[in-house]
Length: 511
Ligand code: GLU
Image 1 (cartoon, rainbow, N blue to C red):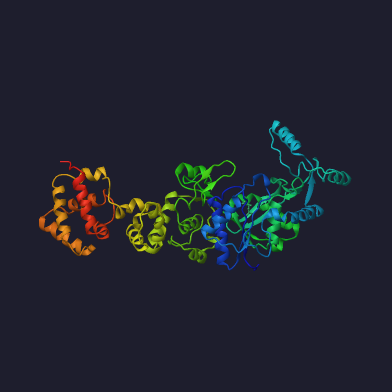
Image 2: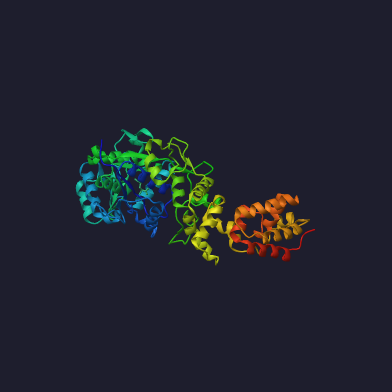
């Protein structure tokens, strides 16, 4: 069936969006863009018990940060507005009643206490209670009670729910775009609640199917945890008489723990020190906080690139993809059936790759706020030059200060290991000689200084490593940093001399 591609990301605002949810949104987005379709954001907030304030804003901000654009939905509007299910509440009852009238659903009047009591009785006999074809004719349902009794109960305001009447012993044959054909016998399934009079709200299943239909969704791309609901969803489409416009389904593999076993959880992140959420989160109820990729210094492009490859592969060796390249390459038939193991080191690797690819100007813009925090006021040109020299060694912008502070401020202390190794023997005297050589160089450019110093070292027969490491101790204060002449040419002759003088004056040689 050829129809316009319309997909939706349909999160429930029950807390911060897990990176598995971001990946679901991303695959929906890539699929929509690849096929010239539309991406819808629908907020599924019919479960008032699990509603968490702030979660919806968090979802929207996360998608924005990731560059996942919404064409229709909450925050954007569109022809099927509203897109927040709690604002669509009056739509759903009609559909629930339609199923009752057609014999696909029934009223059930059991109170939670009654259901609890039945559950306990079953447990006492070592059995598990399921609300299904075996019991629905014996409990307080419109299948067991007379029509008059049902009417009376409803009219006097008893609470009721509408349950789906799952057919008995039927094989539902389904197709999933990732998993292929799947079949389930309905006798293994229970009669799910579709609507509750208590809060006049539908449950997930009813609202989800009705909205997918009304919003003309063509493909449902969602997490594997919804696969067990697929038979019910197929049957709902049949019950409503909508099979000809039923969407196609694709259930995405789980994101697994770095160790491989089980679903990736916040606790894995806490234990191993990586975020499982896109943005920093503070729970409005408990005050509990969670790390986010954004605040931990990841570039959104790197985060998205990493997520895209967790469960999908392009069929080539290419690893670095821009969003546009992902859109061009993405297809559901390259999504794997098996879970994708999350690798924290790989996330860092992606960030470093994007760091290396950034221009000096981009890096300057990111580094300037850090420099200002340290009281360093330099031009963008200088900030960019320093960042450009060091970007190959940085994973996060947060690494820069440690990697480059010596460009801006003279060392005030000296690394112990480097000092022990080089600040002894002839080296202090050689450094004093080198000071005079440097003092005599007028053109202090990188190339000229390098040429003159090297010629001098050769002429004197000194060890190259010995001289350069001693100079590094003076200029950087440690054994780290870029090529020595990157430093000399950047800080200039007078500052070089000052730093050499400071080391000679302040640190007593070891032997
Ligand atoms: N509200 C569901 C969730 O939070 C949506 C599942 C679906 O996409 O059908 O995951």
